[in-house]
Image (cartoon, rainbow, N blue to C red; front, side, top):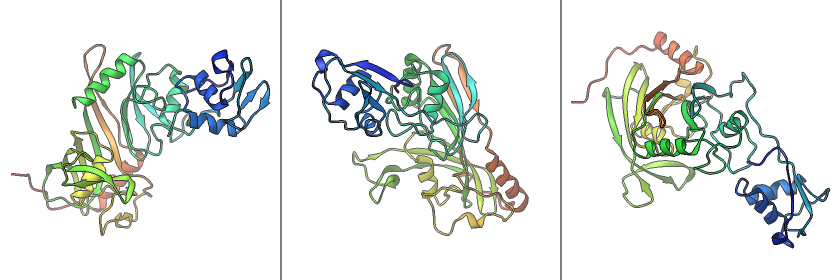
Length: 331
C-alpha cells in the first residue's frame, strides 16, 4: 500500500519508459500496475506539476512524479462494521470481524472498506504480506457475510508460524451456524470433496470426482440446540476450503439461515416466526479459535460472542419453536 502521497524523480535507467511502468518501478511491489493505471486515468498523478491521464505516455529522466492515492475507506469508530479486538499483544491480535466487512480488497491499493485497510490505519504499513500485498497481516480469511474470530499477525516470523499451524491443521476452529432442518443424528462427519461450480464461478459444490480440479474437505457437525424446523450447529472444519461449511451443511439438507447462495428446496426466511428480527446476513459465526502462540508457546483459546441478530433469532426460536423429539446419537 502506498503512503498518503508519493513523490519521486525519474532516474536515468527509466528514461523514456511508459508512465505506468515507471510508477510501478518507483513504488516497488506495493501497488499493482492495473491499480496505478486506474489512478493515473483518474488524474491522481502529476508529472512536473501537470496532470497526465494517459498511462502509456513516456517520461524523461529528472521529471518529478507526484501521486495522490485515494484515501482508505475504514469503518467509523463505534460503527457496526468496526472490528472488535478479542486479544492483542505486540506480536498478533485476534479480531472480532463483523458480518458485511470483507477481509481485503481485490488488489493492492484497493481503497474499499475492509479489515486490511482498517489494519493499515491502526497498525501501520509494515505488516507482513505473505499472502499478497492486498492482505497485510491477514493469516486466514472469513467470508464477508461471516462474523467472528480471526487472527492477524504483526511481523513476518509470527505470520509464517501461524500459517504453518493452519497448514498442519493444528489450529482448532469452532463455528456456530443456525440452519434450517432437523437432522436425524446428533452429529457426524461430512467428507465430501469440493470443486468450483462451472455454472456459478464464485461458488463451489460437492463432488465425487478425485481429479486435480477437486480438493478434499472434511467437516464435523453436531447439534447444539434443536427447534421445530431449525437447528443450531457446532461446526468444526478439519480443512479450510472456500465456502466449505456452507456447502457441506447444505449437502446434508441443512442450509444456513440467510445464506444468499447455498440453499435447499422448501427452505426460506419466511419459515422464521413473525416475531424474529429481519435477517440480512448468513447466520454463520466463528465462535472459537484455538492455536499455539508463536512466541511464548502457550495455547490461546479465544471466543467470540454471538452477534445480536443471531442471539435475537435464537431467543424467539427457544420460545416459539421448541423441539420435542431429540435427535439420535450415531451408533
